[in-house]
Image 1 (tube, helix red, strand yellow):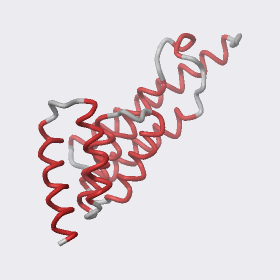
Image 2 (cartoon, rainbow, N blue to C red; image 1 turned 180 degrees about the vertical axis):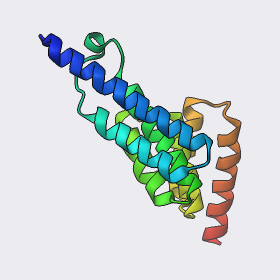
Image 3 (cartoon, rainbow, N blue to C red; image 1 turned 120 degrees about the horizontal axis):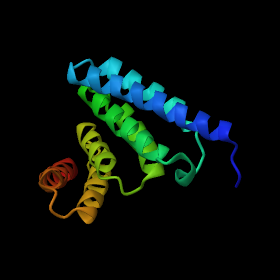
Length: 153
């Protein structure tokens, strides 16, 4: 498809602005300002969502910025104890990249917090399928299995 120079320039500007907003989120995160961090990641994600130009045209992949926004937002929400929010956010991330280890692990961890051990187990098993040497996932899987067994009595 032929894209005008203006469309390409606009796409690049949107990515640059979204990236800057994401970096503001990172700065908030480092200070432990979870709510502000989550808000920055959301804003960055909203900005960049509309960019549908191909990577070849843009010279960078907007999806990598989107994934960083979503997985970082999930981490901030988890620090706030908003596990339903984490599950929502990571599910959106996984609709873009179904194998994303961070998103799977964070969603699994939130399922654990909500005592949804079966769902937790599925997510964590997916992490281990992608990366068998992930020790955090190995520990989490053990906990999910124990939690599920205790729940069943």
